[in-house]
Image (cartoon, rainbow, N blue to C red):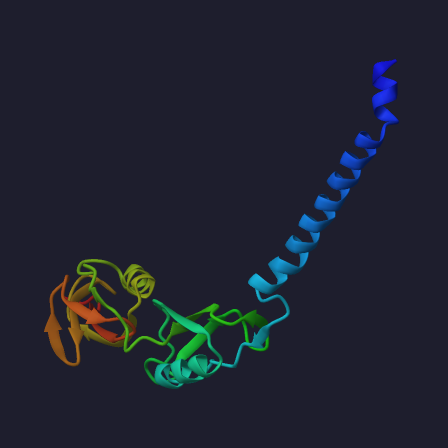
Length: 183
C-alpha cells in the first residue's frame, strides 16, 4: 500500500520529470556539442596529387589544410620523373576534414641495387628465369666454342665481365656468354 501511495505521489512524478528533463538536456548537448567539436559537415575536397612533384603536392595540401604522409615506393615508373606522386589515399575529390592525413606514394629516384645471382654453369633457360625473377633483363647472347651447349660461361655488363654477387640496379641488361656445343 505504501508503495502504491508513493507511485501516485507528487514527489515521484516530480523526480520522473527531473530525470526526463536532464536526459533530454544531456542528449541535446551531446547531439549538438559533438557536431561542433568534431566539425561535422566541415569538409574539404582532396585535390589531385597524381603526377605532381612532391614540392607542388605539399603546397597544394597546405592550401587545403591537409597533412601529407609519404609512403615508400618500390615500384619505379620510368614514364614519370623521380619523386613524382604515383598514388594517393584517399583519392581525389573525396571529402575529408581539415587536418586529415593524405598518404602519397612517390616514384623512387631509381631502381634499387641488387646482387647478380650466380648463373655460371647454368643453362640459358634457367639463367633467364633466374635473372628475370630478381629483376634483371637478359641482353645480348654471345656464343663461344665450348662443349656445353647454351651453358652460361660468363656474365657481362656493358661489355665488361662481372662476377656473381656484383651489385647492379634492377632492370639493367646483362649479357651472357654461352657455349655453342663445339669443342
